Image (cartoon, rainbow, N blue to C red; front, side, top):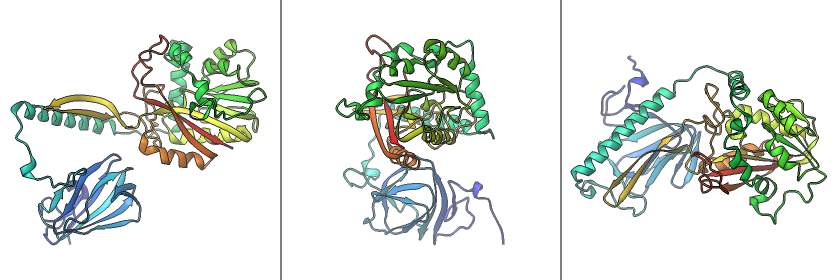
Length: 416
């Protein structure tokens, strides 16, 4: 009897004709692989070995379908079973190769299904080789940065909420600067996308708003409250910051405002509102647990049949949205994107030191089905629509917005 540590193995492989290994043999290869969301291995097959993948957790895409916990997938050898392996969520899998044969894997071009082998590799000029080395160096540097950033503390939701309160209560930052890009946001037509499905004026979410009562979640100094009062009979507001609520009361004295605890709506009346909305705020809450609690409180505050529209930030490529470097080789351009230091939709970044644009939550194309499913656990008739922002950052009726990772705003619509 003897034992070894899985952490001592290379990429989780612990049985096979290699070192280090727990048991050396060429009869089989076995490994436990941890695949980060976004991992993608090029399409391939095996000449002679059978590959078996058992999914322990997470979600993978193989053979043009999704596989989750408890699924066992068998790849037959010989070129008939060709697939890439893509991690749709952080995943853990067991991989078994029978037998263990070196150089048995054959990579295939996903578009042409042509084998990629040594004869296909071009002889690069010295300039190209230097470019490749620079790319490799950047990748290693990014890996070091991500490794250091992944060291987390044992902070809780209360720590995160306290951090947010400190940031928003800072007297050295004006209410306009808390909102950020204030003049630009005043020009953006939020009403069109909050009150009309897909921003289409032919599809209003209410037949009439003049008899309706609305609530602005995370209202700040009351910027959107003042605008929405032109549309609704009454508009209340709530916010985590007592300082901003006091400012809102000065600017919109006819409105009722409430201070929240950071994970609720404060003392707003229950079963009272026809409509609850938010703009440029929910995306700054980098905790799924906290947002989930807020959503449950929204449902309690709505009248039967009441509606919500929550604006958040979207980039189809999220979380890979930060351009790190750009290279050109012959007629090809290589753009390297770094994983953003932000929370995934289901993440809880309680150890975040900043908020309000400095550590947000993002939504990407792959997240959309899960986001819709998550909201549908609380509300009915969930819909998503979008409005472009990237083309307006430089100039929106003369107002400029600083560079931001989001290409679009996403609007989450649902009903009680």
